[in-house]
Image (tube, rainbow, N blue to C red; front, side):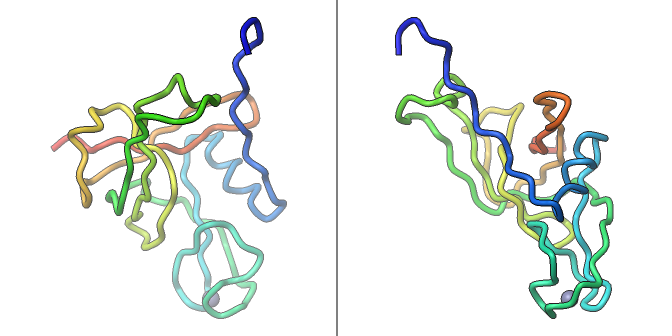
Length: 140
Ligand SMILES: [Zn+2]
């Protein structure tokens, strides 16, 4: 690997029905699908509601707020595009809308994290196509 550029991080694979999610993040919004039959939010994006099987889905801008449901701090890993980021936090965020989202918690000391900690979305622009939603603790 010496003398070569570091490996690139994998890019999201975008299914057609998930495009509004990525269009929203580019605009600095977190968007979630909402089933107009069940009156619940849905995440990850789907072509039909996982609760009723219906297709009365619409996109709504989410609050961007939630709590840490679970997390891990990655401190060691096989060589990859993520090695330089260590230590980094991979977390499941329980959004206020009732769905869970896999993401990173950034801008904080990983040792200070705990489950149920309130967090809010921040956006990390990768390029013209992708902006990633990540989360940071909400200051008390
Ligand atoms: Zn439904």
